[in-house]
Length: 81
Image 1 (cartoon, rainbow, N blue to C red):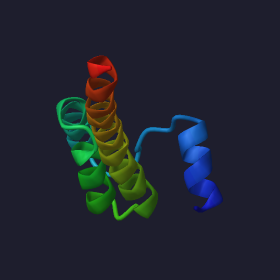
Image 2: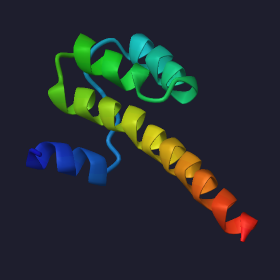
Image 3: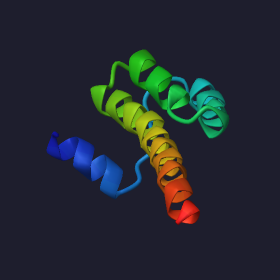
């Protein structure tokens, strides 16, 4: 990971390049479809850091969802004892 990407994440910096109206609209999209708005901003602004952040925003909840399913599947055999 580049130090610029780490600084962007640590400082909670939002995208400032490109058309601000489009950035706001894609920010709203990002609220409902996590990661997609940021991925689009990264592509439109040709900013690989924003693209990587969008991919992480998309993957982190997915990992949590899979983890929750695994916990439920492990809980059933325990309850049968």
